[in-house]
Length: 427
Ligand code: EPU
Image (cartoon, rainbow, N blue to C red; front, side, top):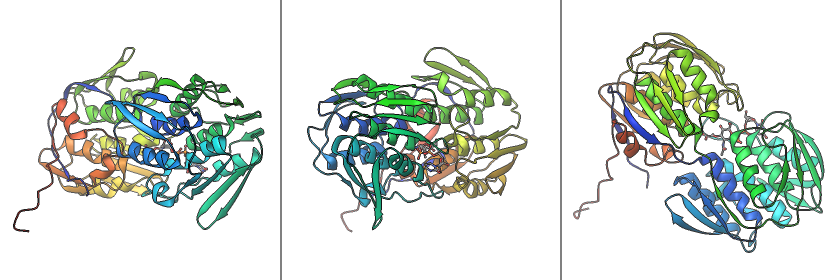
């Protein structure tokens, strides 16, 4: 059953503290990586999101048992691999599941994984994943909508990625961890989610050198042991709340945050006139009473401005008088928020991957999220405008934001998600 729409009556400032959830995009590959060990692995900092459930369903199909032992803590155990396939029904739900291929290659030497296809905002190729596998000695064939991958021996050799890819880097790392070969990956992603995966694997006994740099050396080891690990906080969730604070000209404090993961956003917000105060794991965003300035931005791989915050920034800039230009070359079609923001009175002109935004006040309207971050842009826009905005497509928000309505209320927003109507006894 689809969740009911989110109702937001905005136009009021937010205040107080909000604890950032653990990272979705770091937790997903780490859950997959846990199946490289035949011993139990305890993970802390796993967000309760529908995407996490999807990856757990896939892992269960492969042979991983899991038990929740706390609100964000989970024990995963894969004593043996029962299946080496990842069927379309599971992979098509979430593109990130494609990295099961690397984990299966490492643990079982073979994998049949459905081609992931695109998503709501355009094509999302996996050519770099496949090129990396082939260059490192894996045989990969395509048949009937599946990739069939097999390795006769340990992965060995060198691969230079043609572009920075988070998932491609993670997939190649996973495939190379077990065995007796040595793999060098160049032009590897230095995204926080890649670094967290490497730290997790090394904590179980993997030998990966070069963490946080573009050149990684992975020396195969015979096996990984079990262990315990805490996933990093979610920088995209944190960033979304920072942008919400700026859009509502508010002051809020984020806890459980890594300010060093958010510098590109913090710099942009400061350029607009927002104050940002960082301490170890807290961050204060202060836009109270500010007249913000328009800015231009272009998305890039980490540590540049993240594409996953582009729609939210567009919503913020749609409220800031003056002209801003937002460009997203990472995902040129990531624009499903634009038509919905138009319904709220935004003045955004699109040409290719460029949005030219003339800021001004927005108004409430019924809108529909077509994907996760577009949904985030819509709730930010809704928070700025008096009147009630009803946001449909909440199943997308549930993929990335935990208990959203409740947590927005905790910082003073008027956000409710009515329970579904029970069928009447007469029906
Ligand atoms: N690309 C290729 N070929 C490939 C792989 C990627 O051309 O084989 C291109 C993509 O089309 C894109 C760029 O490389 O232009 C970067 O894609 P990347 O592989 O880094 O993305 P991903 O690993 O598939 C993760 C996040 C996304 C986030 C991107 C970019 C997860 C589960 N997903 O995807 O998060 O947008 O990195 O930072 O980690 C989200 O959370 O809303 C989300 C979509």
